[in-house]
Image (cartoon, rainbow, N blue to C red):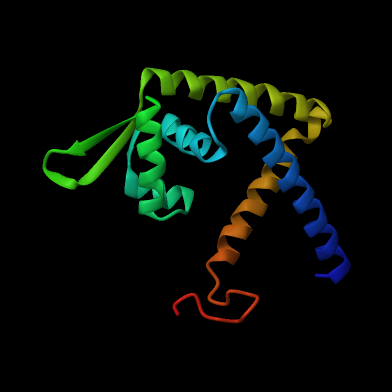
Length: 158
């Protein structure tokens, strides 16, 4: 691919990242949670209940970092932690009633916002935009699995 096209794509991607990040930060602050807590709430809200190990994998964070975040969310009465009676090392998390309210608020705000975003795109292009976005996400996930880390050329195995 031409270097000028790659640079243009990277520039647009950085702008997208900043704008989406800013919007998410503003919206989550309205709901009284941090961006990290928002990601946790959205993932649990979409699944209903999940293990901390599975959640850490989805969010791409280590379990100890996530556990600290979960502890704070338990104290804020957003999340319940349930230990598996057959294996105490296996812990599930679920949203409390308060957590479900925050989840619904964030979902509503995001749905309204992205509806406004798509109102600025011709309706006949909506499906094309969504498909292109899925292709980009899929390609990024595959590229992230490559052995070369990029900047230093180190293998991911070291």
